[in-house]
Image (tube, rainbow, N blue to C red; front, side, top):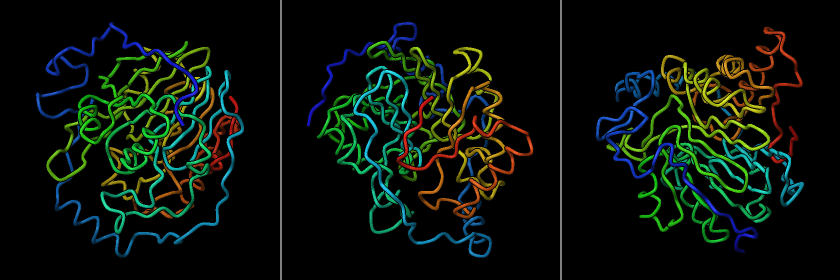
Length: 335
């Protein structure tokens, strides 16, 4: 089934995509990208130290959670309808556009499907029940965010526009996806009356052992009559305040709350619930929805820890419970 709506996309020339990579807005040395606030990459020894410690410190997850799948509440919408499908996969319906972030429908977040982190819940919306997707936003190339099998299925079914960080386009083209566009930080595309800007995050990229930080990572800021910020996957940094200063306070922020323990290993690149709420405050966002939890066991915290910890932190800060949403996967939320 091909797209129901014909769209015209324009790359805004305020930051031309034809510019050489040597002049990128994101820090770039000609081979590797970096963060606004650089951090030291974890070594193989650090990884082994964590994995050995995890044998005794990691909280086990259930093998499977009995979860419900929902049908989309609408095929298209002018006003925002937000549905967290699972992990960082979010269906954003606004301005008669269907936008899907970091789509992940595979059994495992892994380069192979016989090993690696296995999903414990079904996607909140079955793949075949997804409405026609116009735009796919890819925050970075880790396997739990850039799932090639899912992207190929979407490409075959809907031929959407795929939007990602610099140097991702050629990777997607090599894998049969020809409708991709690369963006540097602060570059934008437009569709209908919507502007989508690729914004900084604090993270890294890699598909294998030897390609670390060779494809750019980031979040997305979606603007029309509403402002929606999707953080993707990130640690805490001053870039949240920079985004607010440059683009304004969002009406809604989609912020990760899971995959954060142990802190000595994860802190630079993953928010914990306390960090997420600080980012929410830095952005001066009207509402927040938590993402990046309850799907794959990627780190040491327990299955329910992100939700329980977030609820405790909300009470500590005396925040309005209606402003911080812990979503049910597959359930639509209006903003």
